[in-house]
Length: 225
Ligand code: DX5
Ligand code: ZN
Image 1 (tube, rainbow, N blue to C red):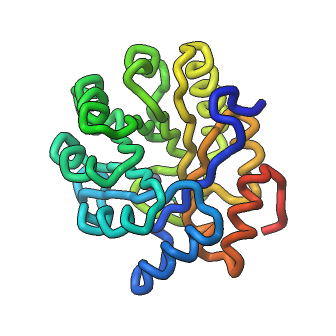
Image 2 (cartoon, helix red, strand yellow):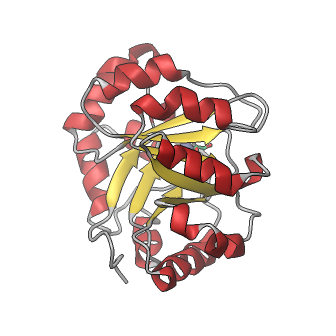
């Protein structure tokens, strides 16, 4: 089942898994290797017990000429929406991070970005039907947020399918993105359940050949890894 709205699957490398002492070169390499988007994980030390990057890095990465897919793992993210909006194509907040999801999603669009909502593994997708008209992307987390390099949680395949169906039924052009433990081993299963964007960190950046790694995700074929 391919996504009827967006066509072929897109690949968004997560630079969380890049060599951080060589970040600029790693970003350029993964762009040259065929990335569609660059996924930037923002962690606040509160919503998740880890800290990562600020808007200064987002500004520099935007200067490389690739659309940024900014994933805010931030409690009460209003301030972060303001801070990252100038640099983001997609700006994604967590459903669990705010009691005012609808208002925050509208704010993202008002700031000129495409709005995304992320779901932790334990979050049921039913609420989406009440906000879907203000959503451009749903990010299904297939690991618990906070770190790169974790294993894909197999039970999330069913959720990807449920979210894809909910999106199709809504009639709105919403991307279904999947984040966490994505590799050549599971890309086909994930895409077959309706994902239109695959976020992948460790698999791409630990590869000797990033272009082949990206192609192996985009072609939706099973490879040995
Ligand atoms: C986890 C992040 C992911 C992570 C993906 O909190 O949202 O984007 O970096 O990395 P891998 O593909 O290594 O799981
Ligand atoms: Zn992410």
